[in-house]
Amino acid sequence: MVNYNGSLLSEADSKLTVNNRGYKYGDALFETLKVVNSKIFFWEDHYFRLMSSMRILRMDIPMNFTMEFLESEILKTLDANNLLQASARVRLNIDRGEGGKYLPSNDAKVNYNISVEPHDNPFYTIDLGAKYLVDLYKDYFVAPGLLSGLKTNNKAIQIIGSIYAKENDFENCLVLNTNKSVIEALNGNLFIVKNNKIKTPPLEDGCLKGVMRKQILELLSKDVNVSIEEASISPFELQKADELFVTNVIQGIVPITKYRKKEFRNDFAQELLKKLNAKLRLV
Image 1: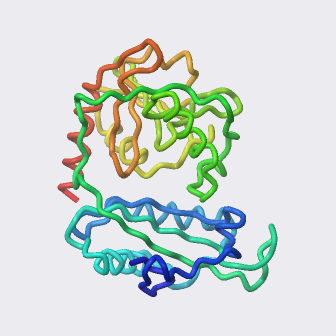
Image 2: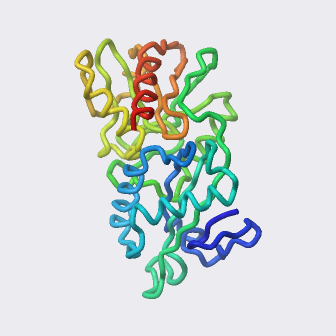
Image 3: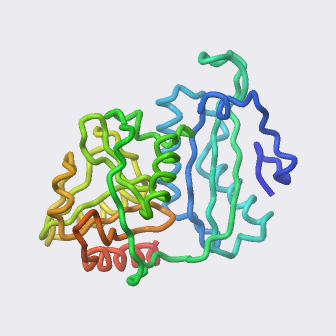
């Protein structure tokens, strides 16, 4: 069952049409959520990112779009799919409805829809025996700036980059902006570790304003033994790093095991993951 503007429908009966602006123009936003036993991980961060993104895209935010309302709609959808007491992946999609060309019509009305699916692991883990090979994706580049960091339905680079990765036996690829700085992975933010220094690209470079990125930065800020830097990353820095890892809300922390000829450890990532799971148990 999917939730379309509060109505629970089968997927076959969903009301999205070919005139939907999210379909026609990518005029839509989404949040990918991890929910375990009715607890939405980092829900407040997801909600405020969504509201901020809607304002940037000049969407009229409905008065009922409170944090409590959208949370109740998510839980209602999970309940309808017998996932309320399980681990689930949720997609909350917001679009501007129908009407207009590039310029929305005056009567275009914001819609929401929610879809859910089971997810195996309730907490975050690292598979120590898994390989995770990456390379640079250099066919297309992202423009620097905060607009590139919005979680919109326009994910062309992520799609063709994922196809490229599969064709070349990579688990992921790293994305460059037009300044040729490394900004993120195809499905998450990037962190590099060198000695006791942790570095991640700044939002101004065009990387996603990731919810898990925010959690990791907060955890690192409490560690007096490391220094944190949000600064542009050159491709030359990757092979000099001790560790590279990717972060997202669904997987948590994913260590990169090899980039080109350089193989990496994951000791720091393992310790950081313990702190992340501990934080979740305390919340």
